[in-house]
Image 1 (cartoon, rainbow, N blue to C red):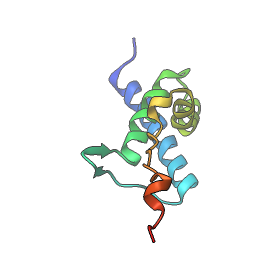
Image 2: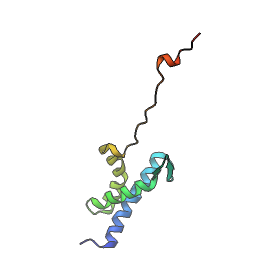
Image 3: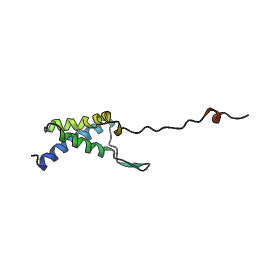
Image 4: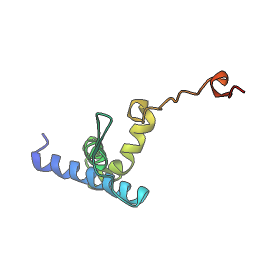
Length: 101
């Protein structure tokens, strides 16, 4: 049986690994913001995912931190639903772009 202290310890190690990854990768932290009615979690989403991945590994603090470091990247590449949706732009038809003389 895992105690609450152990859960928080492994979750925290994974979250710390995710935080380090965000700082190393981007050189900064992205704060949460709203965009077109959607909430973008920024680094907080990485903390949550890294924490749960850190808890799910073999219950070693070093493994939990490393899993948090790579967990967000691995989940993003495995599950395309986490990736940003591609926006499609409407291109004008050729007849619309020609200027009548």
